[in-house]
Length: 371
Image 1 (cartoon, one colour):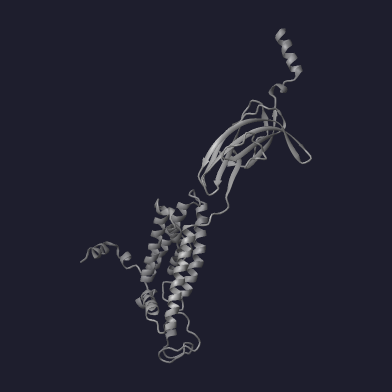
Image 2: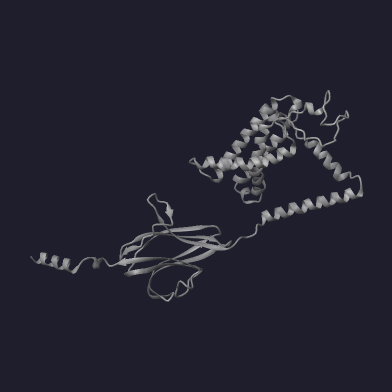
């Protein structure tokens, strides 16, 4: 006995006798898990090649195999006759139609239902995960869909084994291979040979085009996300409840963020200014400004930078403009809203703490001190 036979004999009986189509489902699940979680492989097009069938077809095929374990035969065309000369639609003492299981489905129906049910099964798994602590993330989705698919495969194998041998679904892959070999390498006419060559060339071109599109995806629009956030009571970052009332010399907290979507590594500079401005006739004139902060940021493509910083204004007044200016590379000598790559601002009021004490209160305190 060869080494392969010895190893094969160590496998459990349900695995050894798993039908070929269900074994292919298990292999597809395993290849998807490897392509998603293996550190080097998950950065190659193999992740897409195995992931798309895994999401769009494999779970649905396992479900349909569990629901319909019996073989099915496509309905005979009108006028088609069996070997005994009796039409498929004519009753006789013994016809093929009498032996068929009406609950079975043919191959085309099985494939079509597999696509449809996959589109239903995967979102349902995601919906259930949404109400669990795991959430809708890559690892929970892959693990859950894989588990559901393997469970359905086990049910399908068990139900198929429970049927009589002549009623079980069998995928005629050997006949398909033999027919394909005969059509490709043993054509009846020269026209068939030319069509076979044309078909083979078309398939190679189509596969090559898809592979190139997956391996070298077209770059999307280049842009940079620039935003200001605050922390809510739970510590979550939100784009709401911005502070508008400040006191000179006192600090308030804000979070500035940058996300690089430029499809290349990019160096940024963030400048924060507090400006006293005059707005008239749809134009804004800066009367006075002070630079509060400046940061240099280096980001790879699709990388995000957040910084929780404090704003401590030294200028007082009503409707001052707290401006955040983003530049690619070094900023100019005089950063302005007009020459910035991206610009954000908040309108704030900054009060003088000494102005909150009235002259009468100061005189009262002086008299009390003298007395």
